[in-house]
Length: 325
Image (cartoon, rainbow, N blue to C red; front, top):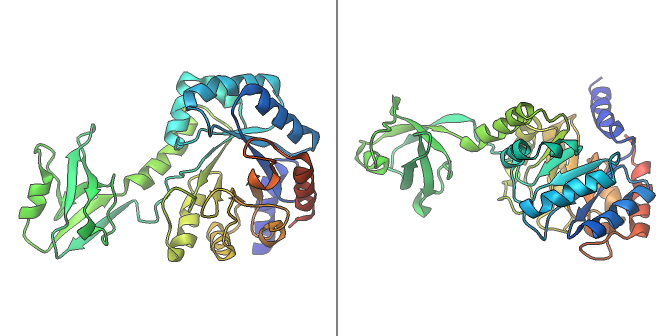
């Protein structure tokens, strides 16, 4: 029964793209309108189920007018967007000034802001941590730096200190660091993992702006800080609760994901869809196909960084059609 449920959930995701095999979504690195149009047309001609557009060579503000023209040129083709460097909060806040961005079918953010630590936790200390803090705009005590000598502690930049020894942390003093130094040992800190809170905020903001498309977030993703091998399964499980589908990757652009990592991520998301966004090509596709439901592909189907090779795309699409559950 569990296997049937798993297949149903994964198949449901694939069917949103009209597929029963693995969904292949070419990633188009947009430099200008005409070149992007040419690449989208190749995707359409080869019957790709959609494509992602990403701004590797321009600022988001310069990318937005191109996106609007592309949607006008291809009003019915499935198009997703990655606003490079933006997390989910930044992405959906952009909708407030540019509501027509809602016409795109999905948004993918490299940084899904997933942290395996609990949202709030209490840390018992028998040694004074060396931290730098400041009051943020909301008058909360925010950690802005964890010194090298304290980096073995589960504390991160951006965490909020809520309590010291079960008492609310004072917010009317300039230097919380001095209070920490003068507090007798041992003592406890109650911490808010702001990264986890921000990840939850993405879904709230998505609802607030009325966006009904899909949101994919990077988990254990290239360039976003490493996740320990022992935490991969948990990271995938946490991410699965905070986005429509988890996206993971190899170590860098164009590099295939390690299969042991991929297997751990599959175990973490359990019956949910799992997406991969680096290094897939016709040679390694079958190795990964069992574990994934979609692949965002650029290097493996391109003549160069900016242009899709129709023949390579056609070959990968044919392989993907065979990769049914």
